[in-house]
Image (cartoon, each protein chain N blue to C red):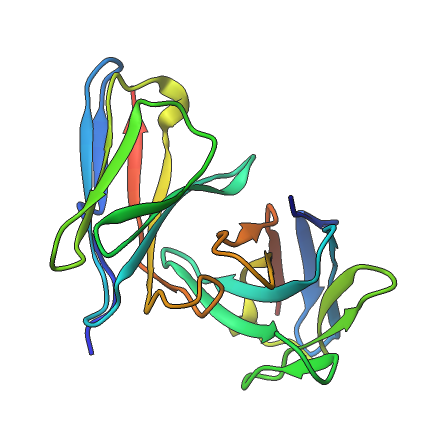
Length: 114
Length: 114
């Protein structure tokens, strides 16, 4: 079975400052990793995913995440945040094989302060 | 292309009642998954349907059930409601050939049990 731990439930940060949202996972098999974002009063949207290849993946809005197999981590980073990045961010994991559903972390609420 | 539509948006019920929630997936998507979202537990997987068959099931009591119709629309039912069932219920659809592909979420149904 897989599990995901998001180490911070809330992260306040000033606008234009850098941010890192931490995610660690546990799995006995190889996995795919995802970050989803939930803006207020909306459903979740896929932000980025790691399936294979380069361990650094990027989204279109400036976020990036790096897969670290030895540390079983998939931390999300952005060098300069905007007010519009205020949202809840969920890390998720899925095994490579089989038809098992995504397992989500409990989420990190990012609040960007003007 | 229309997104995932969930109805109703809000529901208020009392303990002991039952409730049915509806989800219309994106056209062409054959997989529908249901998640329960609460502030303390994050997203917890309920079940997933693919081509009218339940393909995966989470660890919820039998009071939680679902079904999928031939047009891929899905419903979930909760019988004998308890206070702890108060949550945001999210539906997500995907093409369904590979379970870990991108999920498209609806905005959810906010259920309050009094």
